[in-house]
Image (cartoon, rainbow, N blue to C red; front, side):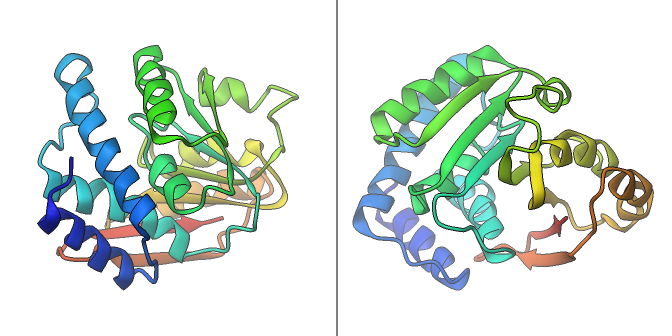
Length: 219
């Protein structure tokens, strides 16, 4: 669970991102923290295990996606390589109207996410087991989603090849990377263009209450 100092950190950090959290959302973040720590003892879901670090490096980092592009009401969103649910679960806690799909190739992570979603009471989320490159060839998934999000699961050129086929015409991919992404951007441009994408912007964000810098590429 998140204690008061951690809840206050989450509240103030979210506010710096332009997001106001209500009591239900804070309660859900607290529940998710407890579940993640409990399951982590057996399944090694994350190396980040202190509540303060989780608030900054998992929750606020995930919510930064909401600051770089518009998420339309009821949008179809897919989190590619979600792992323990990032950035998808924090986004869904704040925007439960979204139709979210969590895609991962590891079943133990999906077992955790299934249990977490049930306890969190988040009903607008589906789980998809498989590899991103295979999902992009599935006619039920290809060019289906309004938005794809992904957090540092591969180099940018590979990440674009994973995500862009899953996004509809005029949809967007929001790809989270570390601060030193310029070389990857140049490397990825041919693949992005070949896939019909265009780099709209690269946002540099310092995570609230930290000196951690993230790059978010919007395609």
